[in-house]
Image 1 (cartoon, one colour):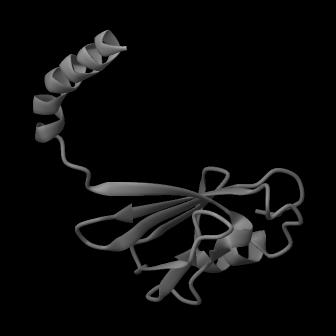
Image 2: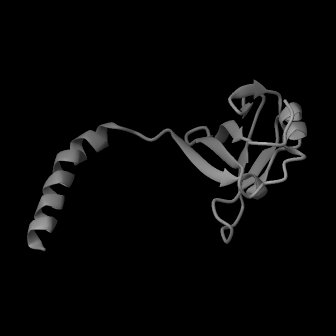
Length: 118
């Protein structure tokens, strides 16, 4: 058991200088479509939960926020329309990209399989 701890400590000590040089500037949250509230307009807020029992997080969006459906870039209005009739919202994955320094969402990417329209 001590050998595992020593090996782990050694590996961490090697990784620390490299980790100190890297800075996290953006977080990517993977959420389900049923736990996402898209903004009403381009300069509003988006809300999402990272788990069913978690509280909603609210983040700002602006006119530079990108919206993608199955890799295709589209406007917020078109994305809202495209996902409005998705039946399997609990199985549909969404990635929300949050720029930490600017404290705003830079992109929302939704992967829909089955019933949707582009």
